[in-house]
Length: 353
Ligand SMILES: NC(=O)C1=CN([C@@H]2O[C@H](COP(=O)(O)OP(=O)(O)OC[C@H]3O[C@@H](n4cnc5c(N)ncnc54)[C@H](O)[C@@H]3O)[C@@H](O)[C@H]2O)C=CC1
Ligand SMILES: N[C@@H](CC=O)C(=O)O
Image (tube, rainbow, N blue to C red; front, side, top):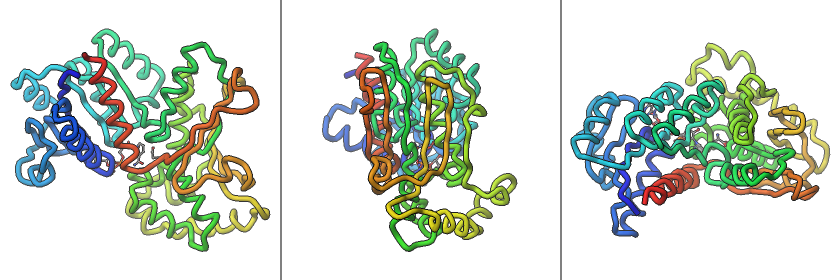
C-alpha cells in the first residue's frame, strides 16, 4: 500500500478517536502507511510528520493558527504525494473548502453530512471537479455511522437492482433516546443529557431532534440512487419546540431542555400496550417521497426491537421481494464512526497502489 499523507480537520469525539485508531493501525502494521501530518480544529493546527503519537500534548504546545494555504505549503515543502483531507467536523463552513482542497490535490473522506446535502448543483459540481482532478471522495459514515449502508445501496443501484423503498431508524442518537425512554422511568431530558455525554448526539442535539440529521441521511441515500431532490423536499416532523429553535443559542437550549419533557411524556402515555416510540425515516423511490417522523411501533417488529444506539435499515428491492435486506447495528458512537472513517481512508490508500 502506498503511503498516504493525511490532514485531519476536527478533533472532537470522532476526530480524536480516529487519531488513536490510526496510531494503533500504524503500530500493528509497522508500515506508517498512514502519515498524519496536520491535525486541526477551527483555529489551530499541529504540523508534524507522523503526528499521531502524543498529539494531544503537542497540540497544546506546538499548534499555531492557520489557513488552508499553510496546509498546502507544508505538504509541498515535504514533497508529500497522495494527499487526503479528513473532515470530522460538523461545520457548514468547512465544506466550502472541499473544491479548493481537491484542486490542491487532496482526496476527501468525510463524516460530515453537510456537503452532500447542500444544493444539487453543488453536489454535482463537486463530483465534476473530483473527476477532472481524478480524486476520490468517500463518506460511508454519513449514513449509519460505521454500518455499510452507502456502499450497499450504491452496489445495488449500480448493479441494476430496482430499489423500491428504504425504511428504518436512521439515527443512532434518536434510537438511543427512544429505546431508553420507552423502557426506563427517566425523563426525556435526562436521557438526552446522557446521550450527549456519551458522544452519541450531534454537537448540537437539535440537529437530531429537529429531524434534520435524519433528513440529510435520506437525501444522501436518495441522491446515491439518482434522485435530484433538495433538502427542502424532505417532509420532516421536528421534535424541537419552536421556542427552543430559531434564535436560541445552544447553551440556552441546554439550559431549557426540561421543557421538552411534557411533550415526550404525553407521547409515551399514548402508547398502547406492546408499543414503543420510534423515530423513523422513509425513502420511497416509487413515489419519490422522503419523510421523517415519530411513530408508535409494535415491540414485535424489527424496528420495535432495536436496542442501545442501534440504527436499522430495511432495504426493499425487486429481488429481495417482501423480505427486505436488513442492516442493523450501532448507528452512532465515536468508536464505530471513527472505524468507518478509517475504513474509507484505507480504501483510498489501497486504490492508490
Ligand atoms: N458522533 C457520531 O456518532 C457520529 C458523527 N458523525 C459526524 O461526525 C462529525 C463529527 O462528530 P463529533 O466528533 O461527534 O463532533 P464534535 O463536536 O465532538 O467534534 C467536531 C469538532 O470539529 C471542530 N471544528 C468545528 N469547525 C471546524 C473547522 N472549521 N475546522 C476544523 N475543525 C472544526 C470542533 O471544534 C469540534 O472539536 C459530525 O459531522 C457528525 O455528524 C457521523 C456519524 C456518527
Ligand atoms: N446523530 C447521528 C450521529 C451520526 O450521524 C445519528 O444519530 O445517526
